[in-house]
Length: 406
Image (cartoon, rainbow, N blue to C red; front, side, top):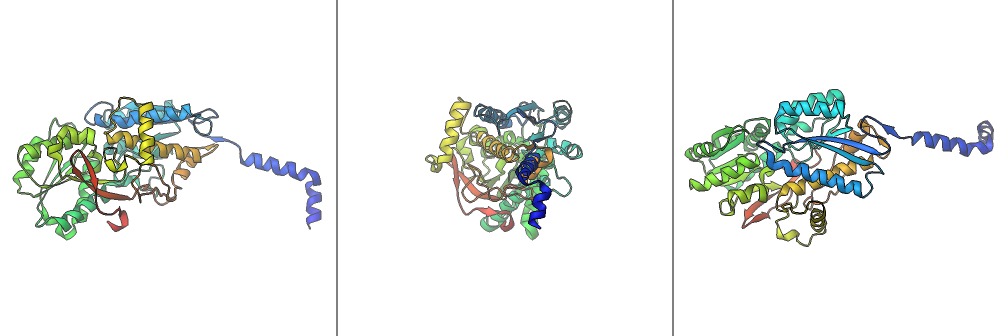
């Protein structure tokens, strides 16, 4: 049988035939936005408008890709990164994303910021079958591969984070009477829905809920309303600007509740310092990344590498702004995703690789927190640790909590 097969293959030509087959299987595959020399990636970010404090993320991502390109690119290809200012306006996001997909023909979108803005392009991206990867929002809907296979989140989802806060309040605050402030959009509602779920049968402990619009100049009147409810707990699911205002106002009116703040507004430089360090003492939030202001990481190898990178690529930037650290970490994950694609830079393979991380150690994540994804699990990070503001920094406490144990 073997002899006949060798004869059929032509003896010495077997090696040549196998080489041909191997070459064919290793052929480069490209969709729009990829070539032998380039990978086009698109993004929208609020460089202006009510959420402009998050512009630090986009600037860090741009600098990171520049550093990747200087080092030779990704598998020899340079990244061309388009980052457009949508001002946190969903209608602008739609217009700009159409431009990125249909005119610039990017391979994928990466880290488009905001729940309402990403919601506005969610169906479009999936209809176009263009990856909407590692979106800069923790809304729970980004982890729905069955209905939206081209969209994936990055950070722990808001719903789970809020469940953890609610359960911590019930376990640690005697006779809790809770006031809630949240942004009046999908972002704020996702937090509030998770918070209610965490309270369960104790939902009656919510004394008052007040919302605000992202475009509101201040939240002072809302904070006064919440204090007037007689609450001894304040859960704040606000963006950075409103969170800083709320912390200040809570102090101004001499309200002293147990104060819980959502993670996306926990930046020392962008929120806590503008609010006043004295006003921020004791606030509790969740963390999944190391904080550059936390002295325990001063000799940490990953933090040293990040600081050296910041000195070279973003000199003068405020290292106390957690948005820079976040932007660095998530762009490192995107770079690794594209590296894993090899020479198959099709959109389908980009999503395949994004959905194939098993306990991956992404630098700057807290110890015990790993990246894991699968074709049925689009939540890369599913664990957090609580931290309390003390002095001029955050202080971690307790154990790492995973979504399934929250």
